Length: 282
Image (cartoon, rainbow, N blue to C red):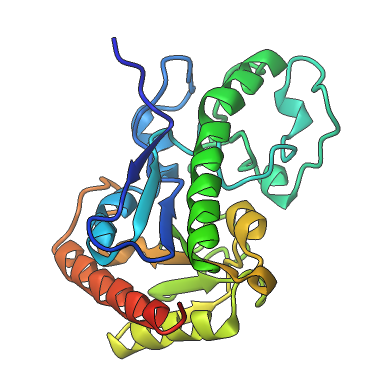
């Protein structure tokens, strides 16, 4: 039986640009050792379902697209490796942990709870099995993303990276905006530290021109991936984009709605605008 890879890399289908899109939370392969306690349909509410498919056209514009195959509820590629709640572990972790506010809410590197608040596990996890998850899934994903970004940066002297996500239409109990309806898009550049402000402005302006409402760094500023790879002083620009799920799917069933095709077409217009912008910068 062929092993499932940790990621899928979709190479540019035309002349390459220094542009990488990644979707770390749209994975739908649930490993056999993920013995979650809640029903699968509850656990899947954590996914950014369909996001990689929505951006599937990106290679036609010269971009590389990387998507995780594993679910974020199993191990979250958008968290740091020390962001673990020690209460989840059956034994000692070999290095110092630094649990963030995400872990405190139950959604750190390892998810302690499902979206409905139910405990994710009916047991504690051994340090050895967590390390296996890191080595089998997390590290290969990050290695692939880092390699693609570094290769393009060496070739072009600059690289632009879009970290692709989706978000619930209304803030839930585990977010900083509980109960608040969200804009159509939220852009996160960690308060201007992960990409040039003009890149954030370009994306915001393009989306607003397509008729969408846009927020910047509220309620999502970007987490580990843009923090790790965004260094605008080195011409390494990383921007997180959150799509409102009500634009394209039924949040309960995860099925696409009639809005899916329109959103896909508008995302294509967005990437076309980004590609045109990059051509003026290289």
